[in-house]
Length: 363
Image (cartoon, rainbow, N blue to C red; front, side, top):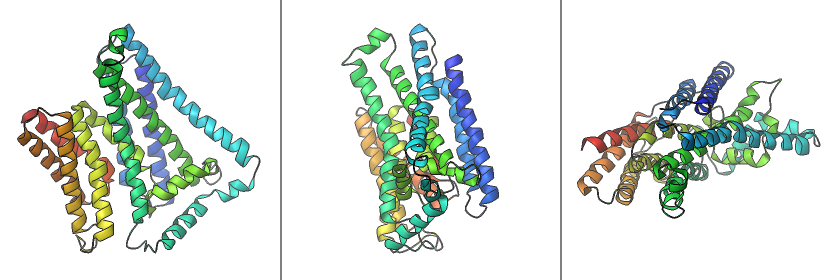
């Protein structure tokens, strides 16, 4: 483990976000006790701290070549990410809010909720029965595919192009695996920092006199409108929580990580979409989840993991692939059946990854 000034800056910034999110969770719990999912917010806050603690362990070696990447990663995560967000909000203020003062009155959480309800009414959605429409669910699942998809692409780039094609591992004297980890950690932590700031601005409506909600770009607000569930209006976005949940399982082989990450996206998507579209029998009876949704989620998870292991571990015994895939799908089903108050996007990758990771080394 390396803990130089560059890595320490990322750790401290991650911890700061954990405290900020905890503060928001407490404020939202106090002001909106019925809408707040305090337990879920606390878990997300803890994930920030876990990510900060684990970050140095991804960089076990320290020398002049690797220190360059440590410094570059810290600059991108701690400076450039916030500079980009600040630039966006400054432009919003200058060209929208300052020139058109009425925008401040139009961009409020009340108007957002009004549009949210009108959108669901057009789709003939009963919010007492469902928290979102099937189109919203499709948009959500597509967004949830972005983090694991980007991570897998970055890993393949590092292994097969950066090293094998461009021979940069020889020039920079670091292995392709180390570069892949650095690239994924840098882009992943940068994305989470950006998601965090955007969510703090979005959730700033809890401060009536100091709300910055009007600085949210219209297009970004439209994305939230199409992807948020009704009860997530008062929470950190699921995409950010999902990305944070990937950090603890990234220590496992890339095949295990990819299987767990895609189970959380594709398996959950299959369960939700099939359940909303075709589900009639609910289990438990008062639950919004359906039997056919459970079956679809299990099969989707199993097939997804099976394909991933066959691609990333072609030499692995097929019986081992079946066991790993079945275990991941089974854990997904158990998490789905428990229907805890903690978001599935957090629980699925962590527990599926842990179980498959342990079995990977045991079998």
